[in-house]
Amino acid sequence: MEFNYSEEQLALQDTLQRFISRDYDFDKRRAFSASPLGYSAPAWSQYADLGLLSLPFPEDFGGLGGNGVDIMLVMEQFGAGLLLEPYLSTVVTCGGLIRDAGSEALKKKLLPQIAEGKLQLSLAAYEAAGRYDLSYVAATAQEKGGSWHLSGRKTVVLDGPSADHFLVSARSAGKIADGDGISLFLVPRDAKGLTAAAYSTQSGSRAADLLLEDVTVGADALIGTAGRALPVIERAVDRAIAALCGEAVGIINALNQATLNYLKTRKQFGVAIGTFQALKHKMADMLIAAEQTRSMAIIAAVHADSEDAAERHRAIAAAKAYIGQSGRLVGQHAVQLHGGMGVVDELNVSHYFKRLTMIDLTFGDADYHVAKFSDTLRPAG
Image (cartoon, rainbow, N blue to C red; front, side, top):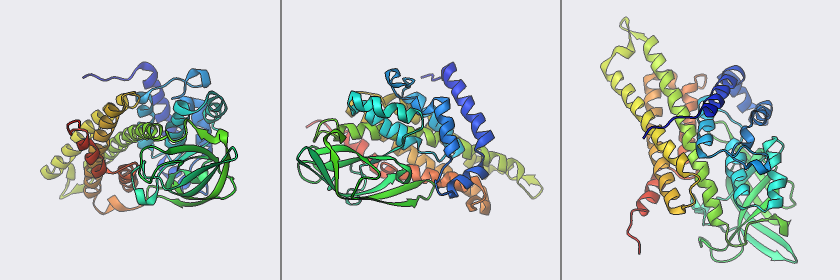
């Protein structure tokens, strides 16, 4: 199968590459990560000007009508530049969820604000005891007098420290781990009874754990139908996983280029170490992994918008599992081929490897998705 970007996609890719080289080099990235915000506010505004924040939204709501492949292209450049801004959380995951399940009034209110860079959202759907299982929801939602009362805990809310609102899953019916009975609510950051404990992740981004103690929201905070939120959340997470696969492609290509340059310039016994046969073999394995990773990321991107949930889950699980494995191979080889320099904080190689590790762990690691993929091979019934 031949796959090529359109002229518009190539132009967007070129614009992002020039932006990163000019305004987001590695030293600036380290400074952004260490800042109180954890990313660059001017860069976020620049994304809005470039149309990145409106890319996946319908034109009726100020968007560009982009698809999964367009998001893959953007995320590939995010990976190459190790960008820190909450694009995945706000635009891909939560923005896509609002687009799919929100009321017309909610879409008109929120999507333009996201597109203009004035609103950030985070998905609070995971709980510690459930690990990667989205159906494991112990947080409760009780309807009283036309309002909803939410109580419970949510963990590893990506980009939670900077979010203006959270999309919180809570159980309005059924037992813990039931697929039915899960509802989704839009909860403002300043809601009474909501506490967010912020922290940094290993890759330099930010996350938070949420505690909800009888948080009260209005009836209009309910997104979609009460008790029927799980399929909508799963679809949003599938799209986010496909985007992460695109980000991994950008990181792996950047690691390969950095490693190849090092092998060409580092000398031992009077010759470049890249001439050593054993190191050539490792570099060849890395390049093969990069090509296979791109193929799997394309499969994920193409299926990310599929209405067939079973087909989408299968393609996404396969891509996430393979990319988790190939990311570890490339990251480990890159560090080893750089020698002691491969693990120092001053070299971007170590940061790329950390980010690949975080990508593997986000929304389910390789082992989890291998199991999910194998489940799709079982005979029906």
